[in-house]
Length: 139
Image 1: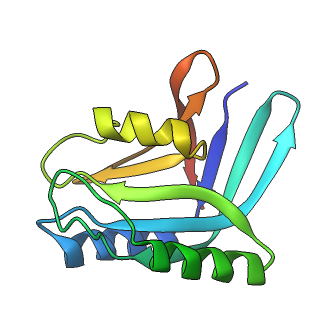
Image 2 (image 1 turned 90 degrees about the vertical axis):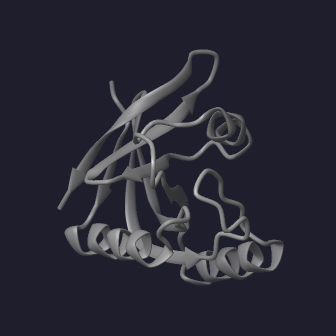
Image 3 (image 1 turned 45 degrees about the vertical axis):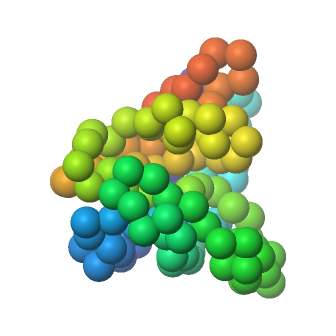
């Protein structure tokens, strides 16, 4: 079974707005919500987009300041949610994890959503099998 992620059209538009605002740098955000486990597959449901600044101010990488990360996690837990995704953009490449993304995906084993132009894709590290793409549903 394939894992999937559900995001609303409004949330997707918000992410596209973050990308436009950050251009030519990568934009980033944390996605909060819930995870539904059904057998061997998971469905990640986005309920909240939490904008965070790209401390790198780079078009080829992003990082999140510790204080921004702590504040975001406080927001997530106070709303009774969990981290269900890490979003960022690739302003000048495709919507596929870079080498640096792949390294950090192993440390942060939640879905990573990448927006490049009009293409948006979601990936997650599959233990022992590398990276797999999730089905992305826009509601």
